[in-house]
Length: 265
Image (tube, rainbow, N blue to C red; front, side):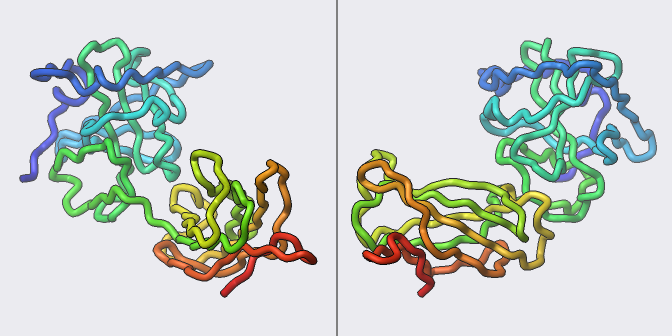
């Protein structure tokens, strides 16, 4: 059911919940930056929209918190709202495209975070951090959300003995984007034939890709052996991919001449 927003519930009142308050489970530290900027909320009497302009975008009230929000989810504090230094505006770690901002009063015992969505995303299906719960405001209409981050996946088969970890560096369209590694959490040697999946997510690609378009993936590998010595693996993974694609054909092998090497099958 669509509902209309009210200026009263958005910025000025303390929300009291029966039982345990959601925000009490989210002890998020938000420190004002040096020379913090004050932003002004704008209320449109015709549409009922409350908007905030920042970072070249206009945001409108969208939702509240629906799940536990990790403290690490606050990326940056941009400033404060309507002259109240306790009401702070933040960007979110899980939202690299800044489709959302969070507004929170750090002095309110029962105050919930409030999430504003960029108005240029109306009528679009966009990735939304899992803790944001849409409130179904009428102005958002068919603007959809999805909570699973789209990814391109590369399957790596370990076809040799004595390997503890395989490290990798991922370049997207020629730009070094992120690095990681695969192996057992116990640190034990990986069994021959073990399969690991390397995921290249929309979040990790950030601005290096355009949604709906193919992008070039280049992966370089290193190997940590049973003696904790690190070796560069010969060969790279190089292919154009799209989010949602799956490649099942990469092997790590070893021989006396080449040492560790990557083989496409």
